[in-house]
Every structure is written in structure tokens, then in C-alpha cells.
Length: 375
Image 1 (cartoon, rainbow, N blue to C red):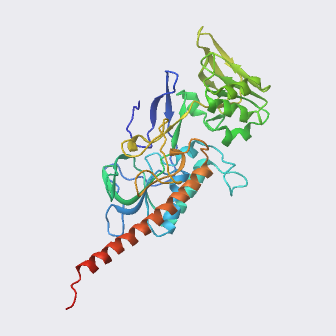
Image 2: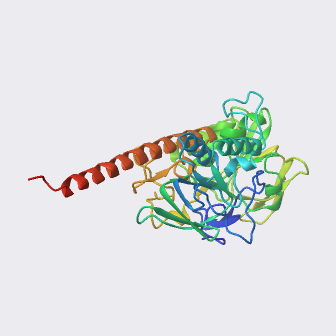
Image 3: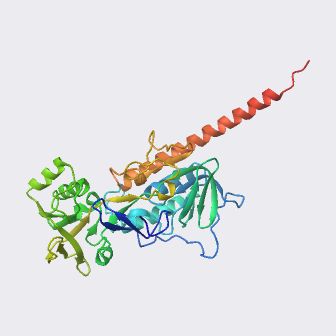
């Protein structure tokens, strides 16, 4: 269940993690430097005529959404981006990105998103920091309500991403990017020869732990129950790995450290006894929640709530395209999301061109049919 609105960009959502207990997702807290509309006046997308219609409306402002905006803008489609009140996606809580091509020395996540935003705006994208409240994909033009304003669009690209599910601890939030992470593939390199912990009991947690053994001196797997929920082969690999130790029946109740993580406070889920576990990194791997609530009545989702795509970026509705982590729960990387955004923009451009050609053909055919033959 959610304790906020259904639109993407929510600050806090409560979700069941599959074990019958609730955990919280936290959206990025630090906004990038983009002008926010005044609270008292709705933002209006301009289309040259001062209206709220656009050929391409992009919902989401992570790597997928902003890359789509760059490509669509360079194709002279003048896209409007509904970015959310807290724009930028998961990279806004990543302190340093070293695996995004083009940055030999790495780049801070918020700086990367600010650069993408500036690039999209340079080519004519119009970005509005509003949450989507509702959509209507029943007919074209499509309708999207955000900030009290109804936007209409010939095509829509959905790139709302997925939010990591966190433990909902105050110090966990404070130390994100300073030892606390939700992505081993992104941040594991920074923990070479250090002791780290992974929280979770599913395949994602087991995969994260095994990946971290490439860098860390020791990986502590923390699970609230006495057996993992992951597949048998992953359970066996984790249990037999010499670098992995397991803390059964344990819950993280606090993250220790002032400027960086120094340890965890654990509670035995059976006895209630508390103890400290010294670690230099914490990876939370209890799942992600795709930001799809606002689309659930219109677009197909899988059993985990992610959008289903057909033929790369197509949704089940002509003219509505999907990009990034809102459908991709396998890779969840900035570079793959950006690639998806590129593909979605190209697909939208080609679809719009084909639709225009069909309309021209229909007009020409109608004119021919109405022509009166000369006697």
C-alpha cells in the first residue's frame, strides 16, 4: 500500500516485501538545480501557441527520460518532460558514478543528472517539476494531468523508473552515498578489501553478495529469517563461498557512524538480543518498486508490477512507449536506461511520421472519392 499519492516522484511509500512485513521506499531527497513552478500557479507547457499540447510527452526525469528528451528535441519534436517534484531518478542518491561512459574520473550522480537536464533543455525540451496525478490513454491525443494542468500529447514515453525499497532507518537515509547503497554493481568497486553487509534473503540479495566478493574482504549476509527465499542454486553458492558469512534471524535496527558507516546494530528476531556488527558498507537488497501506480489501469504489468514491453519499447497502446527501469528489473543501470530512452524517442519519432503519412493518405483518398467525374 502507499501512504502518498499514486504519481511518480513520491517521497515515501510503504510496501510489503513478501515476508509479511512492511518496508519503506524513499525517493531521492536532493533536487537538481531546475526551476520549480510557483506553487500558486500551474505550469503550462508551451507549444509555440501557448497551449498544453505537445507531440511527445515524456514522464520521468532519470537517465531514460532525459535521454529520450535529448533525442526527441534534436528531432524537432519539442518534447515536454513531466519530471516530478523530486526529479533526477535514483542517481540523485548516488554520490559517485564511475561506470557511466565518458567520465574517466567519475562524476557525482546529481551532477550527471544536472548535465543531462541542461543538454535536454539546450535542444528545446521543456521540463516541468510536477507529479503526474492521472493519465487517460483511451484515445489520441493522450491526456496527462500534472500539477492541476491537463497536458495532451500525440505520443507518450513512460520513463518513471523504480524506487529502491529501504529499511526506513534515519541513519540509513543520512549515510546514503557514504557507505549505504542499493546497488552492488554500481558501488561495489569502492569497497575493495573492506568488510561489507548485504541485507535481504532473495535472489537479488544473494547475487549482490556474490558480486561483492570480487572486491570486499568479507561479506556479511543479514536475513531476518532462518532460511533464504532465493533459488536453491543461489542459496548453495552463497552458503559455500569462503568470503560470505551469514547472520540468520537478524534485523538491522540502526546504522552506525557519523560521516561514514562504521557498523550496524542488529537485533535477533527470536530472542530480541541486540549486538553490533562492524562493517564499512551496507547494501540494501530487499527489492525495488516500479513507479507504475498511475498507469495500472492502462498499461500491462508483470507479476512484480513492472510495465511489459513489446518489440523493444512498445506498450500495448499505439503511441505509448516505455523506457528504463520502469520495465527493466534485470539490469537497472544508468547506461541501459539511457539506451532505452534513446530507443523510445526514435520509436516515437518514427511512429509519429508513419501516423502523419497515414493521415495524409486518408485525406488524399477522401478527396479522390469526393471528386465529381467530368461528363
